[in-house]
Length: 133
Ligand SMILES: [Zn+2]
View 1 (cartoon, rainbow, N blue to C red):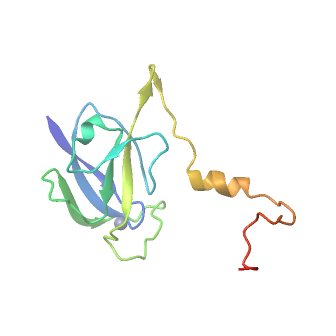
View 2 (cartoon, rainbow, N blue to C red; view 1 turned 90 degrees about the vertical axis):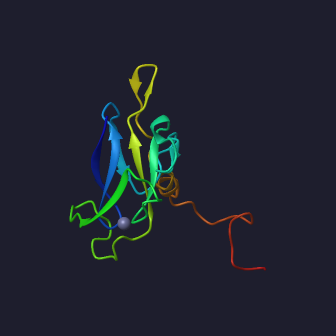
């Protein structure tokens, strides 16, 4: 038996209902894919994947997926003033287990990139430069 579960777009807050099997547990909804998770579209067999890749406002012609027309005004909605549905992708991630242990996602890659960008002194000739082209 499946039953509808409600999620909302982390970009604009548009509410979607997705029919889910009861035994699957959800970990999070994020605007980016988690590192190590395998996603499928809502029109694919996502119960065998680690999560679902959704496009805000797009039901992909899938029967178990409905945009309700409601809009969440939660604090974690990134663009509450933006047009909704916004058409951006977001990711529903299931809880994953490896060897009986729940897997925690690695930090978002862009966070790692930002953290690695410390003060680095003058760039050498290999560094990016707008000159000399
Ligand atoms: Zn949206």
